[in-house]
Image (cartoon, rainbow, N blue to C red; front, side, top):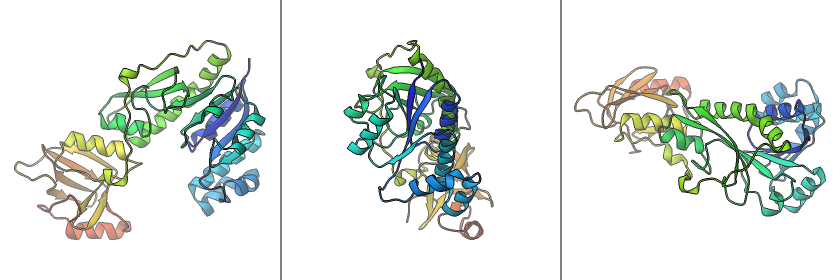
Length: 338
C-alpha cells in the first residue's frame, strides 16, 4: 500500500530534502504546509508562486530577501517541479486550514518542528494519524530545545524519535527511534545537522513500516520523561564561577539559539566556541589571564576557559578587535554588566 503524506514542517532546509525524498519513494505527497507568522505577509505566497518557477530563483531571492526567504523559494521550486501544493498557514487548527487538510485527504500527517500544538480535530483526520519527528530519544528531553538539554547534561548520545501525536507535547506512542552519537566537538549546529540527516535516512523506513503494518506503537515510559524549560537571551550570560567543563558544555549547548556572552564593563562580548584549559593559581573567576587577537583566556572556578573569536556586540570585526586590544588586559575582569 502507498500512503498519501501531508508534510507539515517548519524545519528550513530539511523540508526541501524531505520533499525530494518522498517524491522519489513509492508514497504520494498530498501537500506541504509551512508556517507563516502573519496572514498579511506577502511571503511566502507571492514570491513562491512566481519566482519559484524560475531556475535561478533561489540565488536571486537570497540576494534580495535573505537566506530565510530564499529557502522558501527553493521549497516552492521543488514543489513546482514535483507538482506538489504548498500552503502557508498561521494557525494549523483554524477552520480554513482544516478544510484544506480534508481536501488533501492524507493517510498520514508528518510533522517536523512545528510551533503550534495540533488540536484534536486535526489529529483525528488522517487515517494513520499524525507523526512527529522529535530530536531526542523520548521520553528524555520532551518539549523545546531537546538538543540544548542533551548538550547541557554532557550526554554522549541522543537520537531521533518518530512518534504518534496526541494532545500533549511529545508524549505519543513511539514508532521508531534511531540513536546518534554526540562527539566532544559537537554543538547545537552540528548536532542539529546530524539529527536532520537521521530523520531523512529514516523517513521512508517509517512510512513503509506503517504501510506494511510492521511498526507496533509502544507507549513511552513516563517515569523516565524530562522536559527542557524554556530559554531566553539572558541564559546566554556565562557565570565564570562555574567549572570549566560546565561552561564549555553550556556554550556548545546554547549556540545557535542563544548567543553565549559576557561583559567587560558595559560592553557585551559574544562568542560561539570555547574550550577548557589549564588555569592560574589564585586567579579570581572571570579574571583575564591572557588575550590575543583571536582568543581570551579567562579564569573559572577550577581552571580556565579559552574563549575563541570573541566579538563586541554590534561592532564591526575591525572595531571589535580594536576595542578588545585596547581594553582587555591581563588581570581585568569579565562578568555581568557593570
